[in-house]
Amino acid sequence: MKIGFVGLGVMGKPMARNLMKAGYELNVNTLEDNVIKEFETEGAKGYLSQKELAEDSDVIILMLPNSPNCEQALFGEGGLAEGLSEGKIIVDMSSINPVESQKFAKRLDEIGVKYIDAPVSGGEPKAIDGTLAVMLGGDMATYEKVKPIIEKMASSIVRVGEVGAGNTTKLANQIVVALNIAAVSEAFILSKKAGVDPEAVYQAIRGGLAGSTVMDAKGPMMLERNFKPGFRIDLHIKDLQNALDTSHAVKAALPLTAEVMEILQALRIDGNEKDDHSAIVKYYEKINNIEVGEDK
Image 1: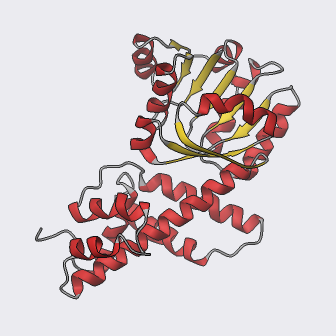
Image 2 (image 1 turned 120 degrees about the horizontal axis):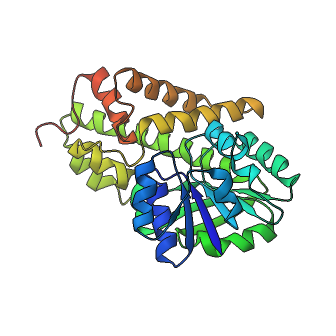
């Protein structure tokens, strides 16, 4: 089986490499010619044309920034749809608007091509070690066909419903992550202002009900003031915008999501959009005139 992979960014690179390690024949396409050449030296076949990649691949994986990027790759001039034929499968692992996922699926179904949305969670570290969590939307038969492929990139795969359900679940995930980081930030600020070491607070509460994977991943980064991106603020802004757009479409009110969105917007205004989303703590540090990790 030949697998096409479109989008070799921070997440796409390690995901594609894990497929190669598993022995799959890989065809790759991305915007950066030097990245294509890099993968060619590792044994992949590079394509400047998405149409030609689609013609030479059985399953095509997308790992792109947002809905418009996916639409362009699929249906733009010289795009994948021009090279697709009946029986091929698109596995869209991008985090996008679920309404757009459903539109893509409908258009592809007209030419006999199956589409599933399978966004991921876990960031670059889990992309590298192949332990991503995947939320998948699509019919059961297609899920069974692509599951062995996805298993080479993930340790958890849950089919949550039909097309669109995967990205709806990812948006729910991103809401929980953003609000959790904001809550940890507030807790550390309170501790610091009250004269209690935030590191001691973290160690004391992490094993109780307040503990979480998010706290363990992002709390130490805040305390060390290490904001090297595993997941950038600008990408989280994109996800929360999709969450809010979707919430308006289905008539759901998300006041806390909207509030954290404004915090992220303030951080972008201050030039922090390329920082890891643990830098949400910077917003709280600014309005409180204190640094959580100072004097360490």
